[in-house]
Image (cartoon, rainbow, N blue to C red):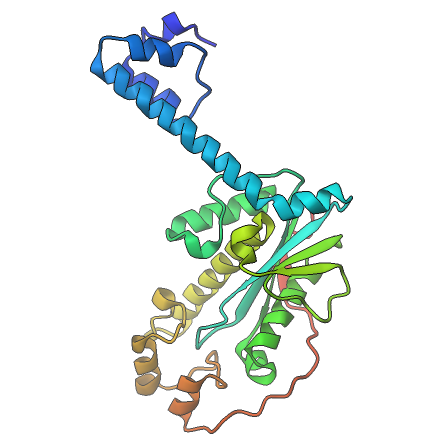
Length: 287
């Protein structure tokens, strides 16, 4: 590592790139030397580095807090803890998609959070790829519009989650889910209210489910142009409802949802509970 004296021979631009942009470890004494430097830019850089260090500490604390459920289970001897979440309960079109992710003990990913809190689509995609690379195992399951209409959206969501767990390739010791538990799943499990904001494993699953469904809806938009599926992902926006009225109902529309029923002139749907079974998932199996 370069000495503080050597580093002070570098330009402030170089130091900013190294210790702010790249977040490299700051040698002991550098901040004090910058603060004592007569140049105003050096003092500004020292404040920026301290600010960055504070943000890093805060992010580390946030991630440790998000692992409290997993840490408790790891301490009890559980090794493979699967977080499970779904995306797409509210839209009028397309499948409901669920994901399951098993993270290694103590694994963290800067910026990982409930997918609803990550507004930038490209950032969600980056996090999804990092999760796929870093997870012990991950899988995605879905239930299509026909299954949603036959079972109802709640049971179809449970079906998608069950398929995601089945697709992991290795059996979890414990399953953490956002709010729900899966009746047909015989594994130990716990539903956590707002779990996607409280558990890192569930947050990872929420990002995988959201990015997978968004990609599917972009593909469906190319197949069924004119409905804005890539923009609003099939949600019941005024534009989508109007497009259904003008262009008609698609095979991917959920006929048990009121705006679609109204466009078809249908009465209340009859839904049979039925078993939640079958296999429809993708994933890495295990690493």
